[in-house]
Length: 360
Image (cartoon, rainbow, N blue to C red; front, side, top):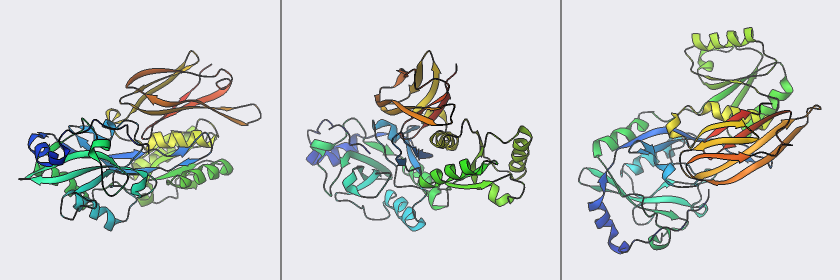
């Protein structure tokens, strides 16, 4: 996670609780499944995959208002049920605030729970039947300095009590996102074993089979994606799809582009992102004219990496771009040497991954 740029200070922050609560305009509140995309990075490091529930304010992910923030909400699918329930009850103000001054963690580090890594926090309070989120800030210690680290221009938000309680109440009724696994199918066990190890390394469960005929219906329903190796024929692929359809399982199907593990991991991450396009930061990627053409919906950090396999099946990796991009369409030039032959481009933000083939 990266810290925010210092916000514009509140000129009356010593009294901003009452003032902001009274002036907060109504906003809609809802929840949506989201993910922090994992992956094998160009330097070989692993970035952990996290499934979580994000907050929708006026129909858009609140996280997108925070530029260049690699973070997850406290409502992550891999936390123990008791802790998950405690987080929900905290947001409902049925438990004491975890931080001083009635502050709650809205987004935290995707890799640990240490406040020292930095977190976006806010005061949550009741005003009549309404719930108000105010005084958003970047916090690294028990006490927060709104003058130095307050988020200017974000909030306060006033939510209707019934709508707010109904949305969070679904999580207490077992509505949290179920952790998904990935099924890998193909005869090339060595490649699939490396892919399975990489997926498990970033927090995604993976199983390897030659076909899906012997997999139980209950197990099939637990897979969020199926990866077909290049050696799997069309007849075999059709049989697998029929098995999933008979089981009523809604899985995404991934046609492996090449036996390049980081590339396959990126394809899996893209397949697991089942949310609407409008809830993604990265919405388009294409390669033409020696450049990657991409589109982002909000300011965020974007990494563009090329992968190439030569005639001796050696993999060559080149990081073409790593930096902040404003909302809109962008052109990223590619090194001709990195994009020759059979090559591919992966673009990623903290929450989205897209893959494109370099056409020659």
